[in-house]
Image (tube, rainbow, N blue to C red; front, side):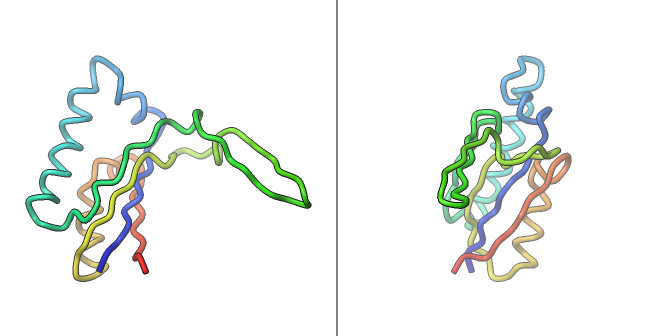
Length: 114
């Protein structure tokens, strides 16, 4: 069964992507994680890495008008990326999600695909 894995990271994690003192380790950990999923044969779609939430725009159609806002929500963690994995059940999907770097300081959400 295919599951979408949505990762959520803090502003500090987003900053680590470009910080000269932290980016090498940050990207190395993510690369190792995706390599492990590829080697296990479960990575159905590698997904994409998202830019920080302050570059986002949210559109809401309410009462006949269109409202636009900045980032979706002011939260501790923001959506940072996604991928699709193909594993037999939610338990194995959960196990793989728990290995993600985002699970340490942010969150990882798993959703079954139709």
